[in-house]
Length: 191
Image 1 (tube, rainbow, N blue to C red):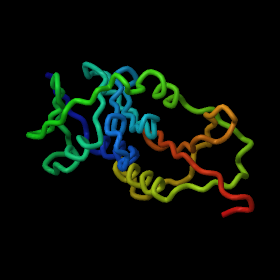
Image 2 (spheres, helix red, strand yellow; image 1 turned 180 degrees about the vertical axis):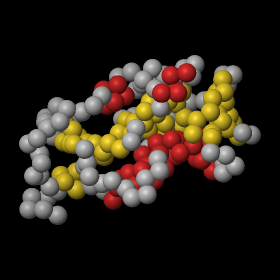
Image 3 (tube, rainbow, N blue to C red; image 1 turned 30 degrees about the vertical axis):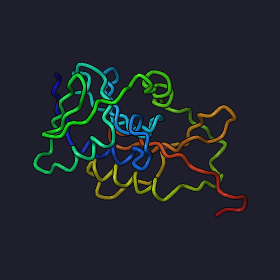
Image 4 (cartoon, rainbow, N blue to C red; image 1 turned 90 degrees about the horizontal axis):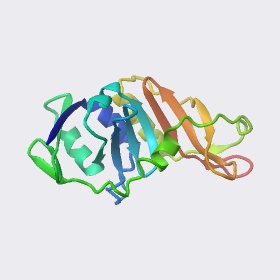
C-alpha cells in the first residue's frame, strides 16, 4: 500500500486538459511520471505536461483515470489530495476504484515521443488554423487552476510532429506547464 499527497490545483490543471468524454478510461486521465517528475494529462497522447519535482519521490509511476480524478477534485475539504495506491485499487478517502491495467498504456513509446519539446518550424506562421473552442476552454481552465487571473492565449510555437510535415500541435507554455492543442487547418481563404 502506498500513500501520496499532491496539490489539487496541479491535478485540476492536468484534468482540464485530459479527454473527459472519451470512454477509454484506461488511457484518459493523469499520468504521474516518477522519472521525469512530471504530471502528464493524456488520452494516449500527452496533452499537457506540468513539472512537479516532488513526483520523483514517489515509489513508482502512477496513472490516475479521469473517473478517480473527478472524485479527488470533488472533495472540497482540503487543497491537498491524499491518494492511496493498493495492490488492486486506487482509494481516495472512502471511495475505491479498480486499478487500471497499464500494461497497454503507452508510457514508454508514445508518451516519451510526445513529451519531448517539439521542433520549432517557421514556414507555417501565415497559415490559417482553426481551433475547437472546447480546447481553448480547456486551456483557460488549466491556467486558472494554476493561479492565472487572465489566461494567456498567445502560443509559444507551432510544433511539427507528423511524418508528412503537417502541423500536429500548438504549444502554450506558462509557469511550469506545457499545454498542447491540436489544430485543424482552416479552409482556403480563411474562416
